[in-house]
Image (cartoon, rainbow, N blue to C red):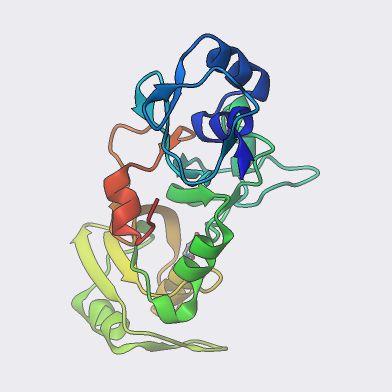
Length: 232
Ligand code: URA
């Protein structure tokens, strides 16, 4: 059971004080009936705010286009993290990035406070597809693609079979089903190629929206949540 003002505040991303004021002004309904008491206890009822049904779960799921230079971490004493780039109302909500992109990697990063979902998406056995576009210091060849497809012996582990699709010139699209530290860079290095830039364009069926500028973020849509197997 949760108090109505806390329930609305967590799900509509507003402060508790604003939630209380909204309730008193009749903007919140419980099972279709306007509820004016912020103390009302909510269990399984459906709550709407300005006519829009609020999600039952208070988890937050954000899709960010990570810029180069931001750390994939929740906090760091010296360096800017991806959480520092979120709007003020999303700070102090227990958010963390789902997995890590290198500091110089850009592109799709999911940020949430749903630990169970993050754990599931990152579990090695989940084999969630992660697709990136790499710019290299040379042109990738069919032999490189074959080596990626075979699974590659690296110093401390054998990389699972991966897809490498040359995109013309020195660019390639890579899809991995695991995510070890520096894995894309290390797989190219094993083929004698250096990654000059790396941008993640898809994660488990969610693709980077072309209109989302680097550093910007937005909530995941229902379809994107469904693609990740997250039920609200
Ligand atoms: N592989 C890398 O080398 N870097 C990343 O940021 C992600 C995957």
